[in-house]
Image 1 (tube, rainbow, N blue to C red):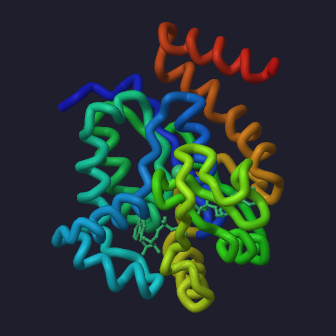
Image 2: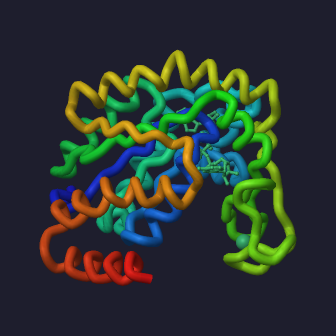
Length: 246
Ligand code: ADP
Ligand code: ADP
Ligand code: ZN
């Protein structure tokens, strides 16, 4: 078993459309952390037609939660990849108490823990507005929004230049309603779970993308520096100081 004692672990909690994926990608770039999105991993498994993907497909289309067993196995496999030693941001996992317990056991076996579970708090109207304008680049997966995050040049992805974009099949009104119910029933209890462990940090996520990123950095930077230790920390401190003075 690898020693992950200097590996920072963050969770982004929040309902569908809260901005977890958007923020996880920015933090990945800025702090050299790895975004682990079970939604993305499941969509890849569906596209590849693996047994887990085939089992998950109809549940995802209906807006339900995929079984804990499938999701935990997918996460466990991905976490064992060497790049995760840089530190991880979990986006969309855990979504149930059994998943949170499995994660805790898994991280303990690696010698690390959840350092912060950051709850992105948004009002229902904003969530629906965010989901209804969401689309992603077909080439690289970069996320966009019709109103709140358009490419710098109309119709061309900022990251890869692709001119093709897609909307998620499950981002329709019916499915979103079901995903919200699943969130309130199964995932919201994680807020008390992480309050009890002392890892919970609640964040008002009603502002614009940039201001939320700034608030997240205030949480993520000191923890990352502290957990990683001196060498890597110096680099991050310098990089983020440069960004802040830009
Ligand atoms: P999640 O991963 O939590 O489901 P996303 O990160 O995919 O949410 O964001 C949903 C949509 O809302 C995307 O189109 C994204 O560009 C947009 N978005 C994200 N954060 C904000 C924000 N703070 N204000 C407005 N729109 C946002
Ligand atoms: P969103 O960005 O809207 O929060 P995700 O991309 O994270 O959605 O997830 C899409 C779908 O994948 C979910 O509606 C669910 O069916 C499935 N899924 C993703 N993560 C999990 C998980 N941790 N547990 C169970 N199902 C999951
Ligand atoms: Zn792209």
